[in-house]
Image (tube, one colour):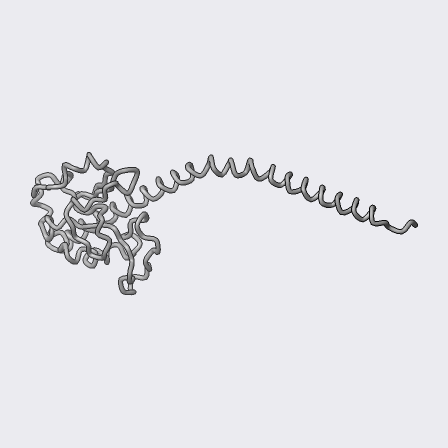
Length: 201
């Protein structure tokens, strides 16, 4: 066997380097279509997550509006007191998670019914103070009386007027509103303006 010369060593080194370069190029060639695919699909995934959050929020508001109705049935037909509405309706909900709009709550609160209200938790719903302790039978149009809704007030037992609706809206440019009769609806910012100064319907 001939001893390996300096030229042979240099040639072998160059061959390995060329092979390594082509291997890197091949990997990059595989990555480019993958990166393009991610770039194309990312907005789709983001839209899907937005739809999921919007539906989850709508469901939460539905539960809370119904909890308000259930409270009224047990308390002489009166809606909860606005300053304690979350405390008052919690026995009918038994989950802090339902009080949290998924868009604003980065860390979901505990679902333990016996634990205190989680510290520093964000909730994102307000109770209409105009209807605090009001008798449900006194509404001539409960389907047009907004009770619980998306709000810029994020604290527990938040009770704020409808001008606390987020603008721009949290969910595809709009917000979710629950009504005295328990139904819920998504409204665009322009569509929700008619509720900003609600009368005692």
